[in-house]
Length: 127
Length: 110
Image 1: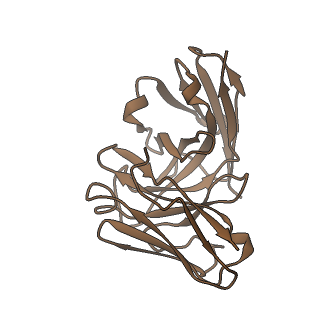
Image 2 (image 1 turned 180 degrees about the vertical axis):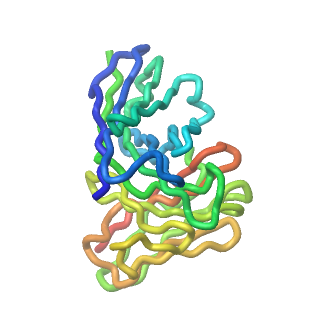
């Protein structure tokens, strides 16, 4: 059974750095064609992809946020960590950890869909 | 602003067939496969359709996807009350160099 669970602060102050941890089970991030990433959803708004850590240690970030984002993995703990610097109230959102899976007969970082989602964690940015 | 365009709402009565559209461009839907997610009220999104028309294990065949040119559609037949949810389309966007989403369609079962 595949599970992903987000953990981290529920409230951060403007300009602070957010650190979110995704702890997963039921799969290995070393398996070809797998990735673990983050997608967020501001209240009552649409989904927004943020970052993806691929099985081969490649990483991809949302270009407009790339300067603020860092995604890393801890293989021994089955965790992927996302840090976002200089938080602003507009970053208030539910942050989801996702398992990305590469579709068949396709190669390249673009070929992924998000097969499993964590329950999400609401992060509020306010002073 | 979402890159993909979806109608904000849709509705149908139990047993009816409804479709939800998703419009993009040559730099996203026009050259990539489409994914659909279902988000039940208060829940995390769930994968519904991938590769334009493939259903993950456990998704009823009442749900089907299609793509033509720069647009895609999700069809739900035999509508049930538990289908009331938000539905999002997604694909790879060359302009973003990442995954793009539609604004979501809120489906109401009357």
